[in-house]
Length: 82
Image 1 (cartoon, rainbow, N blue to C red):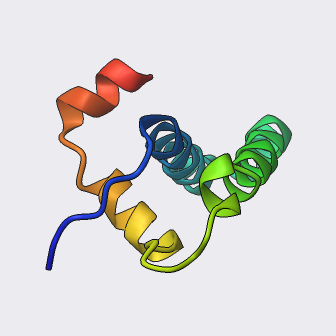
Image 2: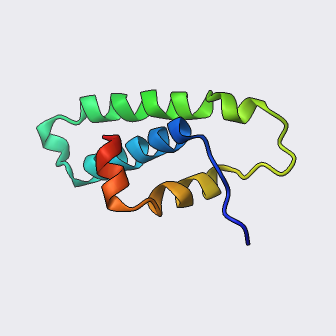
């Protein structure tokens, strides 16, 4: 199976979403999670409306492949993106 190529800005958005979601999961609800929840909603909207999804769907990988690609990025690249 050949690896899919996603635009770097789309991968960066997905990495930020994954990071924010993990941070939200680890944060106690009593400490105020409103900021993290708002960031997650904003990132979700930006992911959903990214120009990549507006093209023809033929042969284009979907969200699962994007999440896998974002998770498989080496830690050094993730640190550089944040």
